[in-house]
Image (cartoon, rainbow, N blue to C red):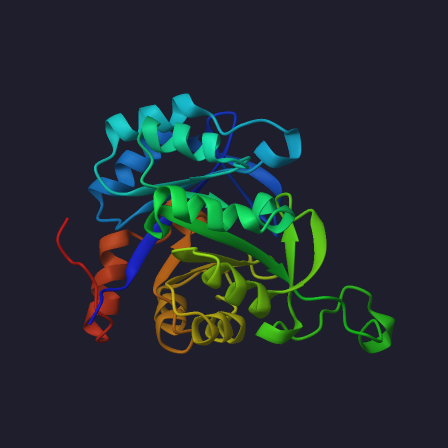
Length: 271
């Protein structure tokens, strides 16, 4: 049985790691390279570095950061943010990244997924899907406009540009399409759950895991060790990704792995 993966995510802005709630209200969490090296030493299986404002600001992901990470970190890492061409991916892989993550560019030009998979191989192409449920049709009880519709797979829609722009793409259908086009993995983030520490979006994650035959990395909402157990069992995810609980040392990676291993979730236990 394939082992499940624990993946710290480092949202990067100006070379620093930041973390917010529901994609906003960012606060500093430390130097991205130093944190990445620490997580590698602590038993993380992989790392993800996301330049969260690259697409919005219309610039490329910082190559120097990737070079620094590659020189310092000895586990696989994925880089995303502002990637929109074969040249972008080539530069990042040559700088030392193991995989690249694309989101907005893939939605804008789905053929890019095919082109990248053909050029570099599916194994290093991750399609990130930021998804959010629409408001309830009636605005919710007592006309509460903030109330959301259920965030099951068929009710969620894809968002781009760091979660700022909604699309008309339904999340499950888009997940199937990116697999058919050659993506090797899906990085699924529930924007409704992101930063809340109330647990992963299990129904949504399970829907994507069942619909796609490629690994699904679940992101958004981790707050306890039990949340990871839930997303690996009920949510059927292949990997669990989190940020703040690791950045602010609320959960240690090996303690989490031991917890999961004791509950018969297959984990890589050696550092």
